[in-house]
Length: 479
Image 1: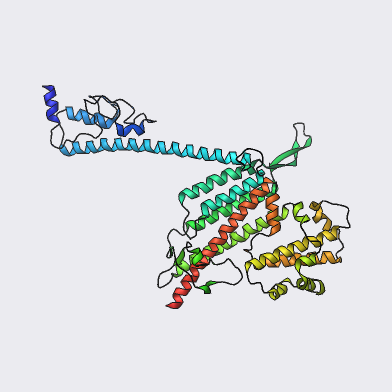
Image 2 (image 1 turned 45 degrees about the vertical axis):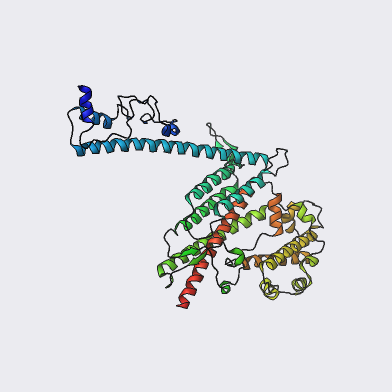
């Protein structure tokens, strides 16, 4: 009779069997669909205990399941309440499954991150030489290449003003934290006064982070966060991008050869900004102007740090050996005559007379001017017995200021400075590339590569904003 009464209860109005219930004839403890959840870490998981023909999939300690069955055995409940209790049981089972999914995903993410860390550590130790034969590059070059490649991976396909993908943003932060952690162990010793218990003062050596890293690394981290914040500010925007298209050739701006991304058939993948037919609102233009100014200041700061780090790097002997014997042969007769014969040298006037037409010409001139500058410095220092070129800065203070070679070297330096000021987006010169290639200082390698990629990102943001301004101006002028 009891069995028949229970059977009748199963057919009460409003009763629906719980999806977690099992077939009494089924002797297995887990269905085929639940095999993927066999690794569970929850004591309340529906798959943590075997299921028999007298229990629900939920544990007996579950208040929802207990109230459900106690209500059923007490003589029945209102059908609406039965349906509500059934939904609560189903929701609890689904939440338990979701928790298992989340834990498995977290474990897989941790395993993947651990494998990436192992790969990164192995490349640093092997010097990017996977054969293990010891022919890899030094640690400084490996870290510099790692930062450069990471930047290309995260920002290489980001050619528009929009927030960075969350996964790429997390990758950038995680990998950079790992690479920059090396700087925590680059220290220097400084004297410090210490008072003993008897009142005597003694001098001890205290270790602290190396001065160049202590000053520049926090600044670079701040610039990094500001650039990410600028990209995040374009979540809601009035303009959009088209994957294909072209911009009028009149968009070329004076003063820089890379200010505008050229839209031609060879770069069909570059997105083109589009604005409404009436143009951008004043609020949107104000926001763009503010972010352009911020990115421009970040670009100047990163470039200043990069130039400072490069100037402190040692000049490789291979570069000094490749210098021409005559600075005049390197720089050319017309420029040499103006630099040597004029009393009041004006680098700006000389650049105006040269009529530089392309970035390639500007970079070639910078290489020639820099080579002639070090050639004249070498001749000015030949009267000294010191042979190490690392002491050139000290030697220059002892040189006669009226010496012809010294005067020409100073004018070449001022010309190179004016050239870089006129074209701030100029690529690295041959000397800069040679310094990076032969550099062995890990701290300098990190600061140089970090500042270089931030400089490039800041410049790109400024260029993208100017592209939007150009399209907006063209649209409003047409109307």
